[in-house]
Image (cartoon, rainbow, N blue to C red; front, side, top):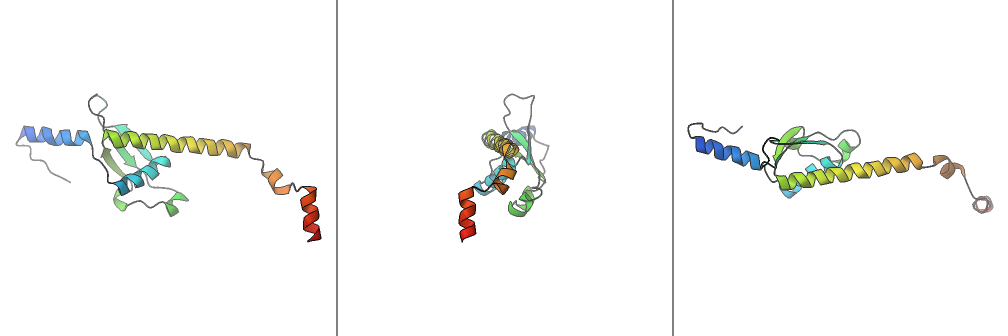
Length: 134
């Protein structure tokens, strides 16, 4: 953890302003976080909701679960951690998270409408006759 000497109030204010601005992630780390956002494994909250000038977000990264944990690679230092993202990348994460939710909604709606029985047991007569003659 970084220590900040408190002897100089202006340096303390400068350090606090740096934190309030948030941090930009490098491309590989952004992509890892975006995968977690798409799967709904991020919790985002404004860094300072009482300050309208502060547009940064606190982002809690939750580890992937279940099947996703076998396929999604996430750096160890990103697992179950809290980051401060700048406003631009935080808004991009929110959009990615929304796209993931919308995709899952469409998938669940399609699953609810799917007729498994028909595709498993219905065989057209001409297809059956071809299989018998083979």
